[in-house]
Length: 441
Ligand code: GAP
Image 1 (cartoon, rainbow, N blue to C red):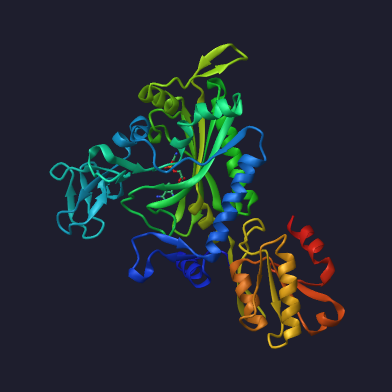
Image 2 (cartoon, rainbow, N blue to C red):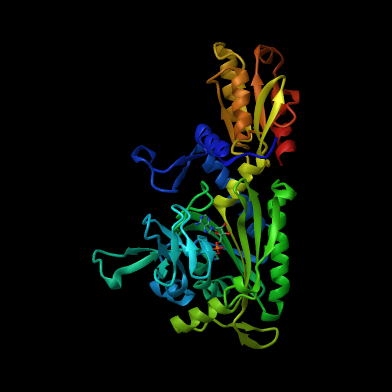
């Protein structure tokens, strides 16, 4: 069985230490989540897999880690101060506030989703609400101190365009990748970690000659789609959705979303947009700095065009979790397995002593665990019976369990159990490194 409800995932995440409600002892703070010991490993692995694929495995990419707080004019240039808004309306009956695009009905005649009262947008017109989170820099809280928590990481890349061209002697085409936190005062956060007010993005701005933008856009759509597949997402749960013309921002000539079929329906994991020269042009205009690129090959100066693959770390991690969850029946009992890809599993190996009371077994198991730690993420665990330990490791996606038993003390062999097949190998302790190098490389 693989189709799973969100309740099951949320409960597994809490029970096994992937995700906890933020500040839970104070009753939590709406739709904000803390990644626990297992969640932080999973998220690091997602980011590492992305970074490896888009930076380390390519010659045409650079990495960046720009500050979250940026000069407020950045957001004037990007259009976020004037245009990053949702239209909101208050239901006069139940006093709840809604995004207009979330209301049923047509034109001015809408219905409250809660109390079903009529909402007439003519007499109760929507107000625009900016989604950026505001704060003040420095000790005086006046207009001049206002700054914003970035609503996307992308702008940190655009404002560093010239720095990267100059310091890295870059020629087009090339791209810049960045992973980092972004913040949006979402009106309707929800669906667990899918839509939150604080989240992490993995974004690329890929700079090309204007005439190459369309091909580059198509290539990135293909590549990013394959990344999710290569990390194990099932084909029938993944699709591309091309934006209709009226959905596109005025400067974009194309945008395609990669969507996953979550238990709450098809939803966006990542968007790939063909953004033209909008961002560099705006920053050049507002900053007064020349952001053109001199193309030696054609002896011309111009603003490069940009293709932007922009994904969410939290959404990718959630999709990997949901997709990996399965329940099986083994000898009449339910076995829950997180069949995560080997790159993503929080722990690769668990080392388990069969008899916790036997100090020689415990000592040998701990020695094996610390030896393997040099190469792999390994956990030693002796907090329950072997059956329970196996079940726990299956449920958190650990790829292999190494069991040390009485016989191991004599023959220097241990049992290695595979998470997915439950097949067991007897392996010489001296050969364990090599065995796992072969399995995990
Ligand atoms: N720079 C372009 C940009 O930010 P976006 O579609 O608004 O585009 C890109 O965001 C990705 O960031 C989304 O595909 C999603 O994965 C993630 N994301 C956006 N808003 C989010 C939120 N409130 N919670 C979690 N992830 C979010």
